Image 1 (cartoon, one colour):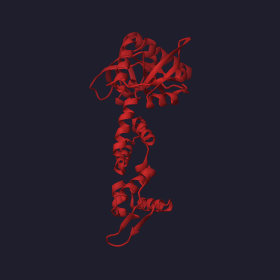
Image 2 (image 1 turned 90 degrees about the horizontal axis):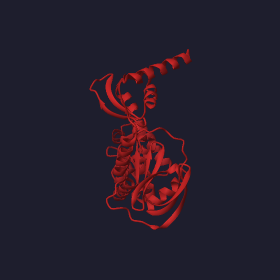
Image 3 (image 1 turned 120 degrees about the horizontal axis):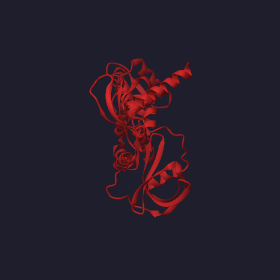
Image 4 (image 1 turned 180 degrees about the vertical axis):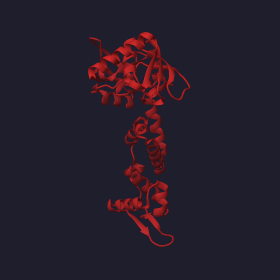
Length: 316
């Protein structure tokens, strides 16, 4: 996070006051030696920082110097805000640092632009972090669809549906990333529909720009659509015991699994679960290994036991 730290130092100095090495070290939660090296790096890169010696001394920026952050454009902000919607920062445990970076950028004079871009990102891009299975799909037309979504331009798409290809004029309202799979949500003939981007075989410019439906929320639409999809799936109920909270998270991350209730035990928690099919339930149980025990139904417990014995025989 050194680049983040150097940026923070620049923005603090840009406030116009002097900062001692000790103050900067305490503010950034690093050692004074680290701050001294950072100041040397800023100076070597051409940033006009200098130190006043003595009792009231400290580091300052040359008068009139400003960083170029105030000129950050909408596209640059959009990229940063899109990164903020990703689970990547959460997975790496640095969400707090990334949030602080946005706060510092706002302090640099781009707060209103950041708010506008943040609202636009939420309206048109939705990241669904719930884990469906990973995919090796290709998305050659995703950049064109992104441009159409952002600029509210209608497009004509060709879309593979089974063994046939259909053509639709689409008013693209947003993009959704579900794990590693992308979907485009748009209006076709006044109806909101969802298309898997990997199945789009061609994109051409449509007749004219369009206006977004008033009150449309991409996140709310996706939540309703996903819930409807799950309700239409076949359901195979089962009861399992899970070793800990981590096992519950892993089970919830599997595709086509709905964890309905979880007991209050701290270890080996009992959970009622809906799987898609008995075969899928067996595979899901095996995927959690020693962290899941099937309680019932008896035929699922037997299927998992037989599969586990076959695997053990292979390794023997």
